[in-house]
Amino acid sequence: MTTRGSSESTYMRTVAITLALLGLVGLAVWWVTLEQPDSADPDSGRDQHTAASGSVASASVLGKKRVALVIGNDRYINSPKLTNAVNDARGIAEALRDDLGFTLIGDSAQVDLSRAQALDRLEQFRHASATADIALFYFAGHGMVQAGENWLLPSDDRSIAFREDLPVHALSQATVLERMKGNVNVMVLDACRNNPLPSREGGRGDATRGLQPIGGPRGTLVAYSAGVGEVASDGTSFTRELLKRIRTPGLRLDDLFRTVGDAVYDASDRRQNPAILDQLRDGAVYLLPAIPVSLSPDAERLAFEAAQSSNTEASWAAYLKHYPAGAHAGVAAVQLAALSPPRPDPGPAPAPSNEWLSRDCPDCPEMVRIPGGKFRMGDLNGTGPWWEKPIHEVSVRTFSGGKYEVTFAAWDACVSAGGCSKRPSDEGWGRGNRPAINVSWDDAQQYVKWLSDKTGRIYRLLSRSEFEYVARAGTTTEFPWGNTASHDAANYGKDKCCDGLADGLDKWVNTSPVGSFSANQWGLHDVQGNVSEWTQDCAHDGYIDAPTDGSARTRGGNCNLRTESGGSWLSEPKSLRSATHYSYTASAATNSLGFRLARTD
Image (tube, rainbow, N blue to C red; front, top):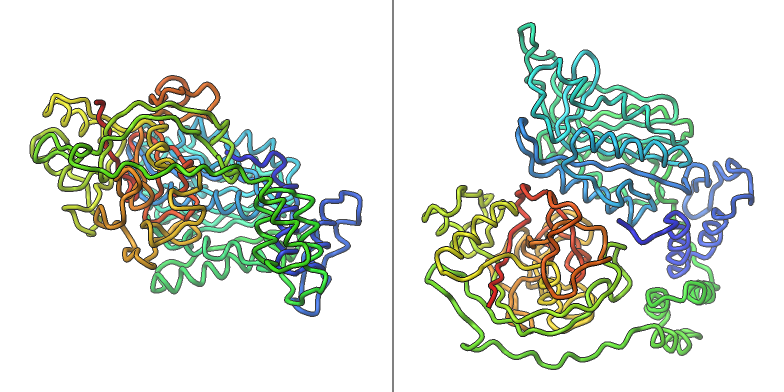
């Protein structure tokens, strides 16, 4: 899901403006020339050098048009469920889309796909990659080898009981390779299952453990998270190490995966040695160009001209950040003010008092009465994806919201009373007043039913619009405290997904006790960060025909997926934006997902 339209051209302009703002005029001008289709022989720039940085790739090996299909499967029916494949896929998808100029099939990571869904996405991938300079396929989930072929398991694996079932109900690596039509093709398989399947004729599965490294045709690089005879366990460091390095300027694609392999080999105490099969036509393929260190005296002028050409809040703000006393700073300030929407001061919100707080029983979560009102919902600041549009006005009725995310103490009370059927793992981080994690949307429905029956009140999850209403708490900025994320205000992760980070007042690398940070203007804690929170809505593509009365959107769309918002302890800053929301399979339960209650008053 992206607003990029022509994502590759937007990507080229963004890189040029960024390089200009860094003072890298020579490279910025060179980069812009890549947009000119008839400017030069695509191979003419290969093996050129700059004195400062060495090799700079040509347009053909950098790849102007990039397309990717990213799949992560956690929620298997027969095979053991995984906990990290979806998060890994989302981290890769965001890096490819937001930082490396890829257009994604389905606009985001595709999660928990059935075989039919996967084949549909592969067909879209085939058409899109036919005109691509670089086509990339990433899979995280279960995989196994049978008769010399690698098989990737879809989430609907109920019919896979014998190894003879694989050709009918799984996806072969060959099937994927046949659909990769780019000039350069990259396949990344982070699959993590031994082969336990018996044969219908008797005996166990193949003797080979893990996947069998199989190369692709010329022009293809295939990277495996483990080598021959090895199995990458769930939570492997392969994708984590890849995310740390994938944005490195001037790192050749083959060297990228070799450095990732070395890091995984060391981190696993030599038990996991990722394999790479490199059949690339060009010896040097880059995802980002090398950055020369020499600066130009014309940097400010070029930065100003780039801001003029773009004429967006972000470009003028970036110019002023780098040149606050520059020759054109006055003009830039005026332009920025003209483009910036008015930020009305919402005024002091009523401080919660005894009249605003309530608890229906000793085991019940504390609730805060939220005053009704109107607000503008969606990407108010122009930094979000297309599914946060169109911006629209919503009227929200007065209701009560949980002062805190539902805790393990509250959840365990439901389990003890027989209202909730499972006791989820706390990952060893502690129960009590830590937010309940590893609970699915379906699990949360059990809790709200139990609490409603117990109290005679109507408890439920917040709607998506109610969540954004309480997240904004009368503000129109990216976050309720301003336009910049802060570890002094919330528990979230590193700047790039997906690891926890203790920094500032955020002393936790995973979940924190609820209420560890100050409440927002309406007295709710941890609406941003700690755990991402389930909401009632089904997944929809954008806000066209969305309700404007604050109610949950439970018709149309995909109700097998439910929305979640707020960001968590492992999220990058943008996931904490008030407007941000994603969707998960309703049965998904992860260590970064929890929920907050609403009560209809």
